[in-house]
Every structure is written in C-alpha cells, then in structure tokens.
Length: 246
Image 1 (tube, rainbow, N blue to C red):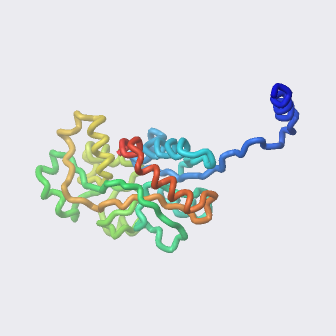
Image 2 (tube, rainbow, N blue to C red; image 1 turned 135 degrees about the horizontal axis):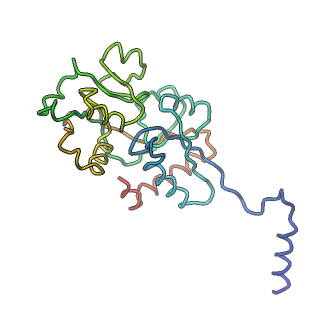
Image 3 (tube, rainbow, N blue to C red; image 1 turned 120 degrees about the vertical axis):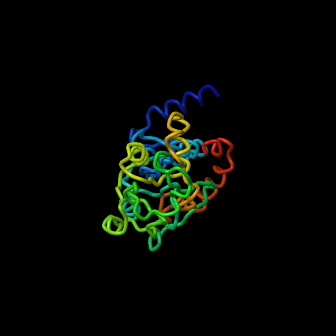
C-alpha cells in the first residue's frame, strides 16, 4: 500500500505540464445589463451574482461566469455567441425570431410608475401619461410604448428622457426633472428600504405598466445542454436560499 501511494505521487509529479489530470469546468457566459435589483451597473453586482454562485455550488462541470453587456446590445451579444444566456428576461422583449429557449425562474415582479408626491397627490395622477415628461431606460421595453425600444420612435411619441439605470430614473423624479418615472417594483421597494427618508417624497402608482414574466433565455448551442440546464434550474428555484433572494 505504501509503495502504491508513493508511485501515484511520483506519477502526478512527473506528468507533463500540458496534461490535465482533472477535468476543468466548462465556462458558461451569462450576460448582465443594468436591470436593478437583478443587476446594478453602478454597484457592479445584483441578485444575478448570488444566483450564479448557487448554480456553481450545485455542480462541478460548469462555471457560470457573468459578463456585463449594454442593455440595447444584448440581443446582438446573444446572436453573436458572446454570451450563452441571460437571466431575468421576458420572452416578449424582442426575442421573437432569435433562436433560443426559456426556463421559468418563479419570480413575481412588475413595472410601475413613480412620481414626486408634491406633483402626484393621489393615484389618479398616473391614469394618463399624456402631457407628462417620462423617465425610462435605454433599451427597455415598456407596454405604454408598445414594447418598442427605438429611441427615435419613443421621442416622437412621448416626452421621454432615456437614462442608463433605475437609480437615475429615481433621481430625475426626486429632482423634478420629470413628472413620472418607470421602474421595476422590486427596485423601488429596495430603494425605499435603503433610503427610508424618501418614503414621504415618492408615490408608487397602483397602475402597472407590465407584469414581468422573467425567465432564463438560453442558446440551444451553448456548451451546457438544455436537459442539464433545465434540471439545474428546476433544482435552483426550489432552494430556500434562492427564494430568500426575492
């Protein structure tokens, strides 16, 4: 037994440097753009970081690695195979015509309107957007704009200012630069938890722009098979630690 053990050690030490003695994890690139709280470009992290850590901890064959991408170029990054998948995407957001499959993530979230309370005295303020200056995000799809993202179209139809992240939208509302902002409900709730002094300044509308159907969008040609990824995600969404993230 002793000689066998020594022999194994010598074999490992004498192996050529180019020989891989243990299988390395295959990298799976996951695109992330500014969509707080799922990914916050200013902070450089979000819920997606915790989700990828849990996926990496669940198995040893694949390394799910985050890659920052601009929101407006996410479809191009996907079709050019720069990324293998994107979490927290709604299939209605310009995915028609792009080869992909989607997996449910068991998330309940929506997009809502917000306004400064000195402008919005009651919920009826949100009933009509006509005549109001709106803050939205570049590359985002809004129901009030027929889910179109073309900036020329948006500016021709609405008095809209396009910014790069949700925190900028909130700032525009608080600084009276716009009348209405459109943000994820999960984000504005998180913002008000972290900034409780702003609760008296911001009114969240009961009117919902859209209810999200957030899913994982994946490329069928990714290194991880659909079957393997489906089983992983099904196991992930059942974990208490995953549910705690939301």
